[in-house]
Amino acid sequence: MSAQYDQIGEKVADWDVLPVRSDVLEGHTFFNALGSVKGLDVLDLACGDGLYTRQLKARGANRVVGVDISEEMIRGAQRAEEAEPAGLEYHVADVADMAPLGRFDRVTAVYLLHYANSPEHMLRMCRNIHAHLKPGGSFVTYAFNPEFSARGPNSTRYGITMLDFPLEPRDGHPIRAVLHTKTPFTIHFSYWSRATHERVLREAGFHAFTWTRPECSPAGVRARGQAFWQDYLDNPHAVALRCER
Ligand SMILES: C[S@@+](CC[C@H](N)C(=O)[O-])C[C@H]1O[C@@H](n2cnc3c(N)ncnc32)[C@H](O)[C@@H]1O
Image 1 (cartoon, rainbow, N blue to C red):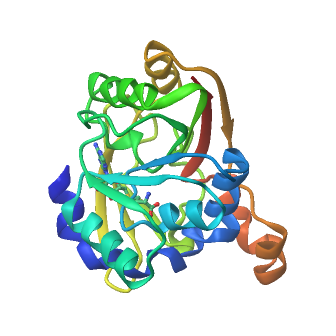
Image 2: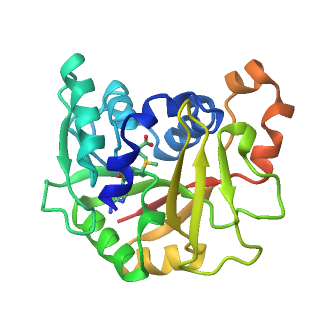
């Protein structure tokens, strides 16, 4: 898996300007699901180049640690930290095998679980996430929407296109998606149903699952109008999921 994002490298530089990744949609939905992080210790998994890791700190989190399997992504995150030091700590690791980094109030992961290549791989990730949470802590993730439908509108004009998405996706089905950045790139991941996510997370010790479909913030509606967002909101490619330790 590391090779995938190691090769993508700098192509992610402008992915935060894609409508699908904007703070009025993705950020708005993710941070609403997360709630306040003021004074909390947060572990941000699959942190990539640190887009959300930096925002967690800016929102008042205490200790913030980012982890990603890709050395290239972590290099980008560290470059940003050197340019504007915020006290962020970064590590290269597969979440499934990561060594203990302490206990946190929140573990976050924007796009992680669909990179599991089997339910066993996802379980190893989720057990490690559980082990990094303080009692009463929460895991908040934003991940590929298990209910995305090939019959619904595709999300191309929002910046991402699902390629050959099956009509009846089954667990483990390989999925490809193109990100329409300045230099477009294709990502590869696996389909996992909602039931599989919940079964694996429950086995790892989590309970109280809350799935939230993306919402557009009032600022996003003012900027582009509800009609612009509606196709995406009718068939979003990602959803937020929160569960408790
Ligand atoms: C779509 S990117 C998201 C990055 C960041 N969270 C963001 O939203 O900008 C997915 C990231 O997951 C990382 N990743 C995939 N599998 C992983 C694993 N098993 N452990 C840690 N990171 C992983 C990839 O290297 C990549 O940086």
